[in-house]
Length: 84
Image 1 (cartoon, rainbow, N blue to C red):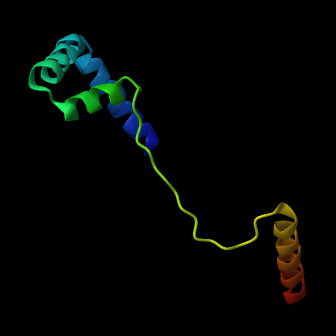
Image 2: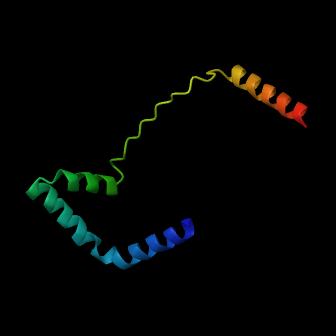
Image 3: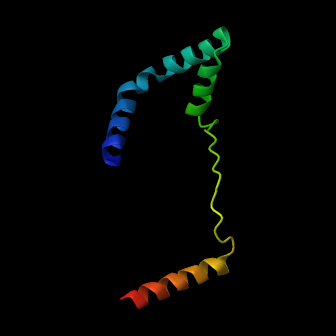
């Protein structure tokens, strides 16, 4: 699926590359003349200057240190081996 999406994206860019200066100029006009904050956000995102912030909160109360993790893995392996 990624190959298809990449091909579509490449074709869209190829088809619209000549219009990009007009598009970006109209975006700047919308930002400055209409004080369009949503357009400013989109513009900055398109330039890679603004990214989405995703916060992840872990609710897992599992082991926090590597030694505990190693012990859990060893225990799991031991249980798996004895089951065979």
